Amino acid sequence: MVRLNTLIPELTVSDISRSLYFYLNILSFELEYERKENKFAMLSLEDSQIMIEERNGNWETGNLIYPFGRGINFQIVVNNIDKLYTNVEVHDYPIKIELEENWYRANNKLLGQKEFLIMDPDGYLLRFAQNIGEREIAMDNI
Image (spheres, rainbow, N blue to C red):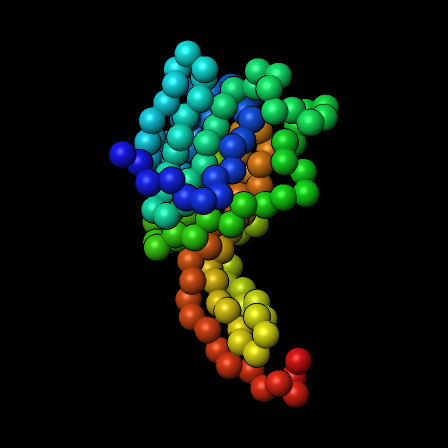
């Protein structure tokens, strides 16, 4: 039985076959299960899970035009970002923001990540990140 996270985004996609190819082959997600009759799939990558379903009129709250998911990016934490990044490059898939190191303040700490961003075939913004540590910062620098 698949262990389900308590929050799992479900993305409406325009072409389930194209999206499955992207997520399974370019990003190395695993197919947990699918309902082909509903053009639906449950996918996972390490501890992250998403559901994708071909557009069918259900769940739509407004006009759905490309790029889908405006105003949101999904951070997906991985253990080996360099391997994933190389696989995206090998497939010659467009990279929105190249692999870089960033540090983000969380109260009195800096949390480090190596990260890059791409858009899936329907324009959902995906930010892949690998944690690289944390640093203390002086409270007077905040």
